[in-house]
Every structure is written in structure tokens, then in C-alpha cells.
Amino acid sequence: MQDLSNETHDLIASDRVEGTAVYSRSGEHLGTVKNFMVDKQSGHVAYAVMSFGGFLGIGDRYHPLPWKTLHYDPGRSGYVVDLTADQLRDAPNYGSDTAPNWDDQIYGHSVDDYYAHAGTIMR
Amino acid sequence: MQDLSNETHDLIASDRVEGTAVYSRSGEHLGTVKNFMVDKQSGHVAYAVMSFGGFLGIGDRYHPLPWKTLHYDPGRSGYVVDLTADQLRDAPNYGSDTAPNWDDQIYGHSVDDYYAHAGTIMR
Image 1 (tube, each protein chain N blue to C red):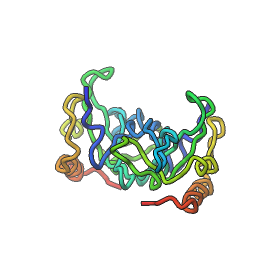
Image 2: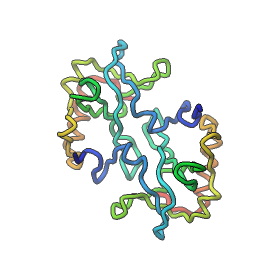
Image 3: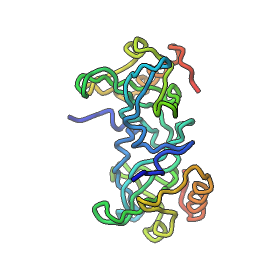
Image 4: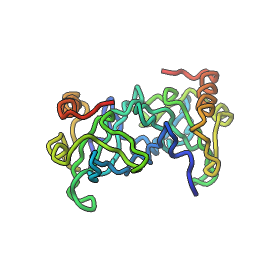
């Protein structure tokens, strides 16, 4: 059964974002969206967490990406980021057993700073 | 393994919102969050879709709730809405085989209008 409610021109269902592929501008498959972090009060998506590297879920690294770095490409049914695999490798990331302390806003700021300086096009 | 990245004072992971219980102000369990609709461009959560009624997933009705109607209650580990079960029953809803046309903004407006008039406290 096709669930027509899952995607529109403007709105996308949360459980459809999860698992969506992420590509570089040149078309390289970089990873997939694991989940995303939502501000409870404002309802704004702060970060999409992309799993990157690893194999069949083993050894994955999680890279929080500011939502604004992700551009949805309907043609690829995925997100495109203006980042190379090397830029991603150097970006803030963590393993499944070393979750960041999101309560400490310094972590979020370090993520924002990295992408601001990486020259990604923010919407 | 406890995943400390899943919830903080400010941020909550999308896959943790999904499945979270929704209660009335008086503590009645109304349903659970199925998923939520995100504006692709702005990254803003427009609606949380609550499943309501039904039994073991059969006969569920899906009620889109404006994000602002949901108040997170850490004590209950769930969301509280200023709505009675009767108010929810009368609210815009659809079944799994009758998805709304989100592309038609009239649908979204009808949802917003209902809750604006239902007297729910919007943050």
C-alpha cells in the first residue's frame, strides 16, 4: 500500500527521513540519516545524525549535521551535502558507545562552527 | 547500552519521539506519536501524527496535531495535550488507507483551524 501521506512537496514524515541516503555534490554515497535531533520546545530540527563509514552497522560513526547543510534532491530521493568524504571524516563525530553530551551546548556549537567554516552552503 | 544522545533538556531524537505516549491534562492515555511531518526546507516540525483508537494497530486513526499543542512532561516521559478524548475524536483524522493530501495546504489549514478553535494552549 502506498502511503501518500509520507511525502509531499513541502512536508516529509520523520520516519521517512530516517534511513534516507546522503550524497556529496558529485554523487558519492556518503551515508544515511540515522535520526535527527529536534528541539522539544520550538519543534525545530537542529541536527540530522548521519551514519558514515562502518559496514552493516558495525563500526559506524555518527556525524551530526546542521539541518541547513542538507538539501533534498527529489531526483536522487536523498539529501545532498556540499561536503567531501574527507571533510566529513574530519567533522565532529562519535561512536555508538561514546554519545556526546548534548546538554552541554558547547558540543552543538562546535558542530555548527565546523560546518560554518567548512564552507558548506547553508540555506 | 544507554544511549545518552537520545534525550537532553532541549533536544530529543526523532526516533525517540516516535512511539511516545500522549496524555490528556487529566492523565488519560490518548494514544502514541506515530511520526511527525517536517518541513523539508525550514526543518520545522509542522505536525505530530498521533495514532488514536484501534487495538494493536488495527483500526487506528491518525490525528495530525500541530506541534505547539504538545507539551513534553518529563515526569510522565510523554506528551500532554489540552484536549479531551471527545475533542480528539472530532478532530481531523484519517485511516491508514485514506491518507490526506498534504500537498493541498487547505488540509493543513483545516488542522490548524480546528486546534486554534478547540482552545488548546499553543506555546
